[in-house]
Image 1 (tube, rainbow, N blue to C red):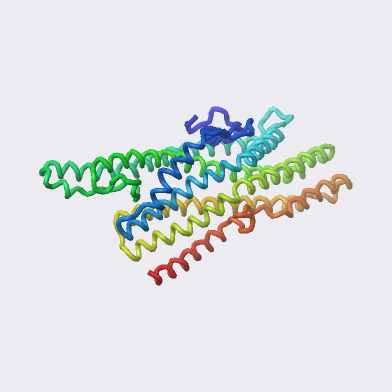
Image 2: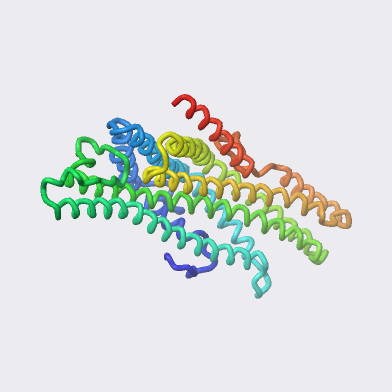
Length: 396
C-alpha cells in the first residue's frame, strides 16, 4: 500500500480510501460506523478539557497551550468535519469513477492522452501520499521524542549528583498542558504518565492530519484534472472526422456535466473545513507572533513557529490548488470558442452552445459558501492577521 509506485496505475486515490476506511468510511456503504468515536474521545477528554479548564503556570505557557490547542483543533476537528460529510464525498468518488470509465473507454488499443494523464496523476498522487505520510510520522516522533530526551538527560544529571539535587531537574513538556490532577511539571512519575498521554494525542493527530490533508489535496487535484481532460477532449474535436463529431461532442458534454457535478460535491464536502482552516490559521499567526514579540524567542517560540509554518503551508496549498481548479474551469469555455462550430450542422452547434453555457459557471471553492478560496484570499488572511496582531500587541 505505502509504496512509491502504485500496484494499479488506474486506481483512484487508494491511500486516501485506505486511511478513511480506518475511521469507518467505505465507498460502497452509506453508514460511517463507530470507529471514529475513540478519535473524538481523545480530542475532547485528553486534549480539549485539560487545555481549557486547567490552569497554566505562566502567561507564556498559556499562549503556547492555546497555540497548540488551535493547531490540534484544526487537525482533529477539521478531520471530523470532513468525515461528517462522508455522504457527499462518497457521491463524489462515485462520480469520479463514472467520469474515469468514460475517459478510459476507447476503441483504440493504444492508450489515449486522457488515459495517460490519469495514470500519471495516479502515480504522482501515490508518491506524494507516501512521502507525506512518512513526513508526518517522522515529524511527530521528533516532536514527541526531543522533549523526553532533554528531560531524561536532566533527570540523569540530577540523580548522578544526589537526591538533594532532584529539585534541579528541568522538565520539558511534550505539550503545554496541565493534565487533570497529575503533576506533570514537577514530578518524574507525572511526566512519564503525561508523555504516554502525549504519545496517544500525537498518534491520533498524525493520522487525522495525514488523512485530512491528503484527502483534500488529492481530491481537489483530481477534480482539476477532470476539467483539464474535458478541455483536451474539446480541443481534439477540430481533428475529429466529421461523421464522429456529434458522438465526441456528446461525450464531451457528458464529461463536462460530470466534472461540474464533482466540483459541486467537492464544494459541499470542503466548505466547513475551509472555513475552520481560515479562522484557525489566522489565530495561530496572531498568537505565535504575539508570543515572539512580547516574551521573546525561546524553545516555546520555536515550537509555535513550527506550528505556524505547518498551518501556513497547508493553507497556501489549499489556496493554490483551488486557484488552479478555478483557472482550469474557465479554460473549457475558452476552448469551446476555439472550436470551428460554424462549419457544422445545427445539431452540432447546439451541443457546443451547451458546453459554452455550462462553462460560464464559476468553479470557485468557497469557505462556508461565500468566501472564494484562492491565492487572493490567502493574501487577505495574512493582512488581516497582521492587523489583529497590532491591536492585540497594543492591548497587552
